[in-house]
Image 1: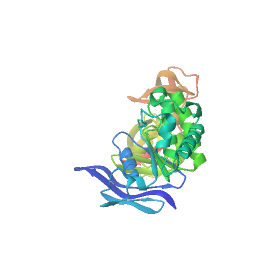
Image 2 (image 1 turned 90 degrees about the vertical axis):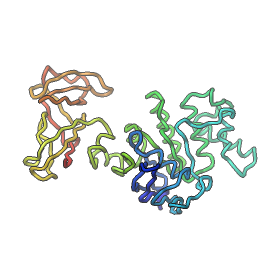
Image 3 (image 1 turned 120 degrees about the vertical axis):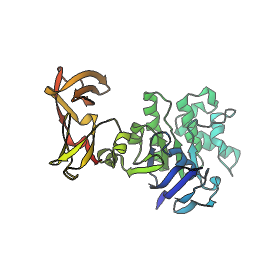
Image 4 (image 1 turned 90 degrees about the horizontal axis):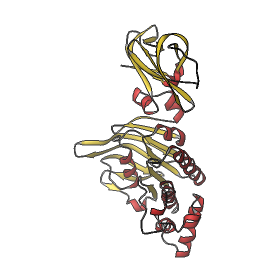
Length: 337
C-alpha cells in the first residue's frame, strides 16, 4: 500500500492554479523528490499533504486513508506527518534538546528528555543538546529540525528545500547524513528542491513539475536517460538545443546528426543534447572557443554554424583551435516540435 498518494489534485489562488491535475504516489519508506523551478507548485504540494491548506479538487490519501478532498480535510495534527521548513522554524528560546522534545506528547518529562537526547545522538548532535539555535550552524539547525520531525515517529516526513543555503561540501555531507537517518528509520519522505544534483543523488523517485503540472514521474535514472520532454531534460542538467526536420531518421544539427528514428520523416523536431554526450577529438568541424576546468571534467565551448554549445570532456583533453564533434546517442533526445 502506498504511503502517500495524490489523485487529480488542484489548488487555486483566485483565478490562478498553483496545482492543476497533479497525480503521483510515494511508496512506503520511499524518498521522493519534488523537482522544479520557483512557482512550479512544489511547496504547495507539501502544504496540502501536511493539511495546512485544503484541496480544490481531487484527493490525498495517507496509508490508504483519505486525508483531503474538497470540503473535507483531516486536521493537520491528526495526520502524523512531520515537516521541516526551509528556515527550520526552531524555537529560538529553547535549547536543541527542548526543541526536539517539544513535539512529543502524552509522555512524562523524563521520557521526552530521553527521547530528545537519543534523537540528537542519532543525528550527531548529542554534544550540542544544550545549545540554542543562534549558537548552532545552519547545518546543525537543519539536523535539529530533522530530529524534531522524526522524534514523534511520523507516518511520513516533508522537507522543504532541506539543503539550500549551504556551501557545496557541507551540502553533500548533510544530504548523505540525512539520507542515512531516513533510511534507518524507513520513513516515507518527500522533499522539495530546485537542484537537480540533490534530486538525482537523494531520491528513489522524481516528480518533475512545471507551472503546477507533473511533467514526469520516474526513477532518477529513467528520467535522466529517457526524459518525457525537453523541459524534463533541462530540469535534470544543462542541455544544448537545436531544431530541424527529420530526414532518414536523423536531424542535422550544426555539430552533426542527431538520431530521431521514432519521429516521422519530414516532421519538425527539437533536439536536446547533454553536455557529456558530446565527444571531441582533434580535427575540424567546430571551433574551440574556450576550455575551462569543471570539477572532474573540462568545460569546452564550441561553435559551428553560428551556434555555441557546451561540452563536458575528460580533463586535460588535448584540443587545438578546432575539433571534430561526435554526438553520443545516450545523451541525445529528439522531440516533436
